[in-house]
Image (tube, rainbow, N blue to C red; front, side):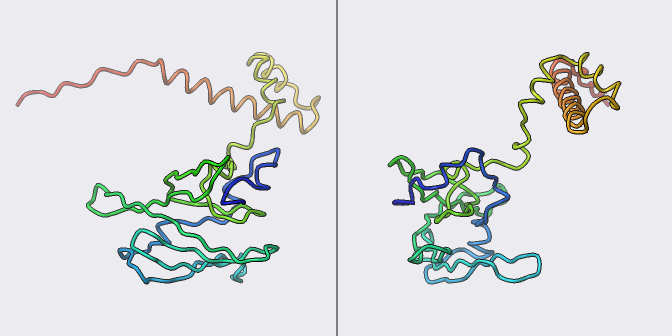
Length: 205
């Protein structure tokens, strides 16, 4: 990414998911002690067998600035750049740290606060979900063919579901998914307009 800016990640037709990325948690980076200048460490990612697949070295230049250092496969030079941390108080009296996204998109620094930064496959830098245009895996299930079935109304869906033996297996799967989605939407509407019972009055002693 030129200047932490746009790169090859922007050419994907379908959004990549956060589950496909290496995730850098600011809470893990900071640890259970207040960050201090001079503190160093290393984060590692492992495969199911326990072998290290990637690692990032870090060093705190100041309590609020941590420098990442790592090398990506295929990149001629190692990467090293700072992350700026921002402390936020928590209700229990502690402190939570967020990182400012270091990426620049369209010439504009992002600077979004994030609890996690992501490194998608084929990318060079860690950044927030918005800059990397990442989606969650659960949101990738949209199918225009399911939308077309939903537009036909529940009567058509029930008619198709009553004769499953006449449907190809992929079509039957889409019908069942559409029925589930229709039920979910109906429940949401009913819940919105269903009047809540009045609160019970406490009896005076």
